[in-house]
Length: 412
Image 1: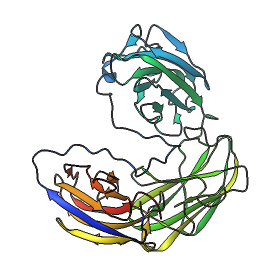
Image 2: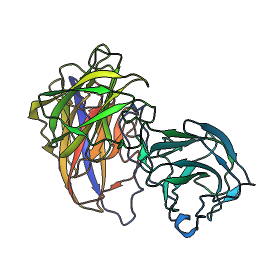
Image 3: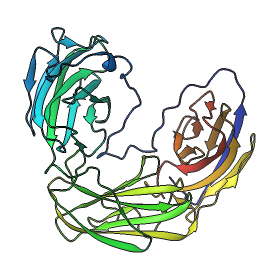
Image 4: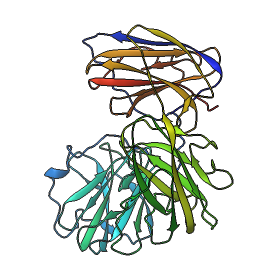
């Protein structure tokens, strides 16, 4: 989350607004949607709408009309008004398969016509549900990546459903079995220390991401402001791909060829380090660009000898600064940033503005725990940034020290 160039940064303003009217809920997001290999998730959940009040038949046949689905099969179907319905009025189709306890599976449902919702019903009638774990409005069990280990031997049901009631339209459902029945996905990360290079092998028996690319994972602990560099190299047919996941589960760095050639690097600029947003345990995913790319690789973690300091900013204060090549960088895109901190109270309402006549501003607001709670590019008019958008105020969710990252929309 960083960016600096030798250009003036003008007018970083923090203002406090007291109001009895709550500010609208902010939609969290990353600076740039670069994660083409990962899925975003949204918090909508309809479990309270229906499922626990509906009795599923012990045989696994929930709807009188159901169809089998086999591992590796994709079925194209359509929700129609003649389909079975759940108690919230939504239609569903049912697909069944048999599996042994411990079998690794992932299931996806996608549609260009409606917001999908999917339920996996176990032989004992307990269930797992997902709305948007497949990215956008698509569903995936488990959400995002990896496999889920089935808890029992028997017949399972997949309910291909919609989030909203009375919704019809075409969709696709895919069932995928992992290799073997005992592999735990995602795997327990292997610890890696600063200055250490670990060698590994991606194979057909590894856990896979949603795009069916194999991965291994590594973990390290670090403090907020610590600067790190991660590289992944390979001399085999593996085209290295890296993810860096923060303690809150968000992906803060992702790269394919930033290390030169086919090597991956976070941040994706040679010789640089990226600043970490929070204190805690970070996860590195050592991945490959394409499915069926297997072979040996090496992952290296290095800490910088320095950390990124922050300057205080007060309510109503305007600070003039400049992004420079000596500034700290974000791990995701290697862009420069300056950081400012202020103390806030739960329920307080604030607005933050950043202006510059030299570059396209970008603002990031971090919570007291280091999670991104708001970002903005051009809501301040022109290329200027403002949180929370063009007007209004953002309500602080908790009491503590908040961090503002004064950044640019482009690296270097």
